Amino acid sequence: QIQVTQSGGGSVQPGGSLRLSCVVPGFSASQFCVGWFRQAPGGPREGIASIDSLDGSTVYKESVKDRFTVSQDKAENTVYLQMTNLKMEDSAMYYCAADARHLGCDWLWIGMIVGSTGIGYWGQGTQVTVSS
Image (tube, rainbow, N blue to C red; front, side):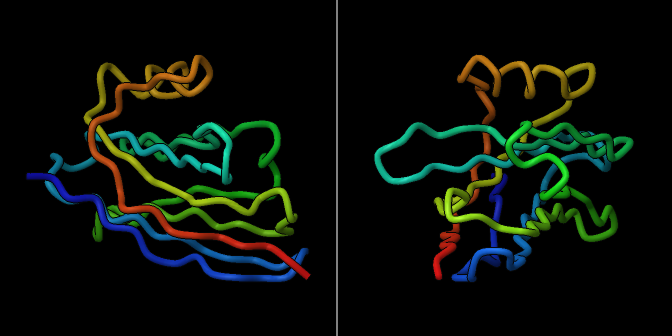
């Protein structure tokens, strides 16, 4: 049983920073993809970033590009979402999710674009609130 565990989040003022962590046990080393998603109250869940554990390559949604950074610690099977210059519109419940690589992680980003990834293993979610 693969259990994805998240930590981090909280409240911050606009312009502030937060880091979320996502522990992904159970996959073969460097053989998984991780996506970061968020869902604001009343809104759809949207994919905002992904990382390929094999080579650390990342993809970002335009709205978070240059402000958010996804990285990984392979030894700890942990993926991070570093968020800087946070805006009020970034307030949402944030989720990480993981699944095996299927000839790479393009399937994940394509799924994020069309709104249906089929990704299998979800973290419990963590709240990020940006307010003054």
